[in-house]
Amino acid sequence: MRFSVNALATIALELQSGIGHQDRFQRLITTLRQVLGCDASALLRYEARQFIPLAIDGLAQDVLGRRFTLEGHPRLEAIARAGDVVRFPADSDLPDPYDGLIPGHENFHVHACVGLPLFAGQNLIGALTLDGMSPDQFDAFSDEALRLIAALAAGALNNALLIEKLESQNLMPRAPGAFEPQPGSQMIGLSPGMTQLKKEIDIVAASDLNVLIDGETGTGKELVAKALHEGSPRAVNSLVYLNCAALPESVAESELFGHVKGAFTGAISNRSGKFEMADNGTLFLDEIGELSLALQAKLLRVLQYGDIQRVGDDRSIRVDVRVLAATNRDLREEVLAGRFRADLFHRLSVFPLSVPPLRERGDDVILLAGYFCEQSRLRLGLSRVVLNPAARAALLAYPWPGNVRELEHAIYRAVVLARAAVAGDDVVLTPEHFSFADQPPASAAAVTAAPGTAAVKPLREATEDFQRSQIAAALAAHQQNWAASARALGMDVANLHRLAKRLGMKA
Ligand SMILES: Nc1ncnc2c1ncn2[C@@H]1O[C@H](COP(=O)(O)OP(=O)(O)OP(=O)(O)O)[C@@H](O)[C@H]1O
Ligand SMILES: [Mg+2]
Image (cartoon, rainbow, N blue to C red; front, side, top):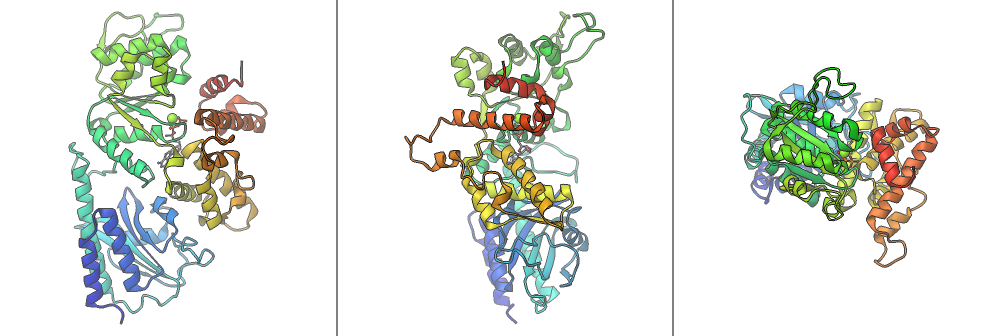
């Protein structure tokens, strides 16, 4: 038997070494795969009824971005329920979450599969999965040996989770046993830029500071705002959303601060504004750069004195609101141009967070692609959605001016196209399913071209070109109907009008 005390010792030692959790888990998984001779192994964390891959070996990299819900994965559900080693029969008709994700075996379905649930006391905290291409591959290993491995891994994982909790300074009180999602755990990405951002979110979330989130369109600013709120003591109260770009000047003040009956024509009753709704919670002011100078002055007042006045009322109301603001403009530039108040800018940007553009996140593109593949699989009820190697390469080569949102739409669109072309519910995405596949886009050339080449454009201009072409395409596809186009583009219609105006597409 290949499995020995030596092998166990190796595994135990690997769990002691390594500089960080990530490194340690990676070594564990790699060692396991070698020692047990499997084709694929993975360590997953269990949280909020889903399994989150932490380290993988022998699997396509996009698995790291996938989130496996119990509902969508009967095998994982069986592991979660089992309480002990699970050996799936080679002819099990439960789909394997890794089908088609073992490189070199894209068109084979997995044969041997063992799942080891990991516990801390009574609580399920994760799982180890072992997969092999030949049906009897794991027969030689006893349940006792596998339980021992699970116990070692569970100890290491539990330690890591405890340390993570301490490090995140997340010291707010919670009901014992309350479900505790990690803030930002739905934010996919392991690149240095995203790791840094998540660290900053952890730190600033717990403070009560106002935060200015900036980043290009579609980078995930709203997701960052949600993570900040969820990671703060205010999470028990509401996160109220207000899009400043969608506010006609005439109603903006009342939206923010409320009004009293008779304050203006049409004010037929008292109404509270977003600030009151967000009392003791968080107010997310999206596209803050679009706020008029007059309202900027009023907003500044609230931030300074913590009280508001409803329109038409001279009494003031005290509110306790944390403001998170987002913008895809360069607010410094707006300040210099006199379009944004410097004092408001300084108050908001005590702790600025910048969300990096997707093109600077390296392999996160693949992780995110995996995440969206898994989401579309669930949404469309498909048995699997995978990328072939050429598709992966194409996604990596493309510069993504529309960032994560563009990638999300590209994957959904590709899945719909690919599904239409096959009979079954088994979808393999190839470059042909993406519209940038046949014409390596000019912008991709721009990114790799040397500086000074004619193809290089200032990023803002390139981004705007791209926005123009997307809007034009949406309008064409929807018979120039703005509401339908806005829906297709995943934005608010008022926003779309404003953007189109700014891009010179509309008078
Ligand atoms: N790191 C991430 N992991 C998973 N999904 C993400 C990530 N970043 C963004 N998304 C998804 O991409 C889409 C766009 O993100 P979001 O709306 O937060 O961007 P934004 O920066 O607010 O864009 P805009 O400037 O256009 O308002 C959303 O569907 C969001 O859930
Ligand atoms: Mg947004």
